[in-house]
Length: 306
Image 1 (tube, rainbow, N blue to C red):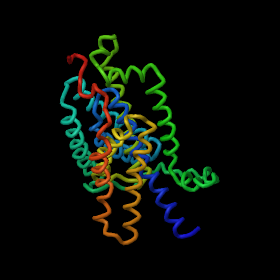
Image 2 (image 1 turned 180 degrees about the vertical axis):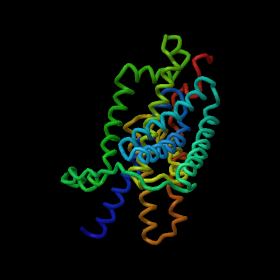
Image 3 (image 1 turned 120 degrees about the horizontal axis):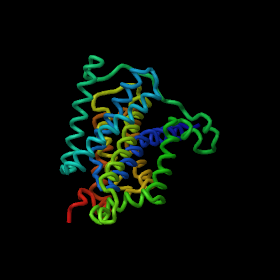
Image 4 (image 1 turned 90 degrees about the vertical axis):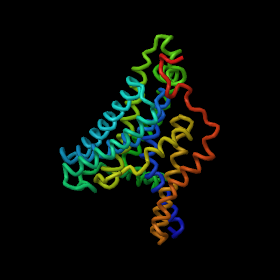
């Protein structure tokens, strides 16, 4: 294999690896947005998922339990976010940013209380299992085979998510609630219950994304581990037109920018400059890529609003 081929393969492997948590989180964001709830709390759900996964793996010695507890942690913060937005009708932007700040403060405090360090936890059991049996596939075998087992779950969730949203009665009801909650209420749909379901699905998937970052990536929790990925996932959900299949292509753009900045750092380019690449891409997409994308009309609205 030539040097160019080796570098290209490394970047492609890293691109997919970096895209996995973004796809999982933005898929959750699609379900939340389709129910009429902004996904601005994604950062808090991912961070809580990352912390809970490490805490669970640390307490049980099992990476599998760590992943499940991480998903539960994400769902818990999603439920709190849902209470604020659905029951108390708090402005969803304020609620989302507030939850994100709370998650950062809470995980930092708990990291110090449990492990005596504000910066990071000790290493724990890892879920990382490469898909070696796929390496025999021509052309893409080495790229796909080098991914975590959560890559397969991500693919399954994308397909199942699309089927649920566009081919089931529940998905139709979810979309109706997201477009016009008052009309949905008039039709007899349990609007609040459907909204909570959409937000909880979002929390579970965002928690899994956080678990991937911690116990499937570096096997520990670090302060502010998500580093804005939750906000990027919100942008990906918008750019992907709230469609599970389209978000994959959007996430790969950001995954590639992340992989590229890591590769260039290894080539001696100053890290401070390279670390800004994903955020420049985010700003560029926000400025030019989402102008004509229409969100669900009922985002931020309630069934009792005219």
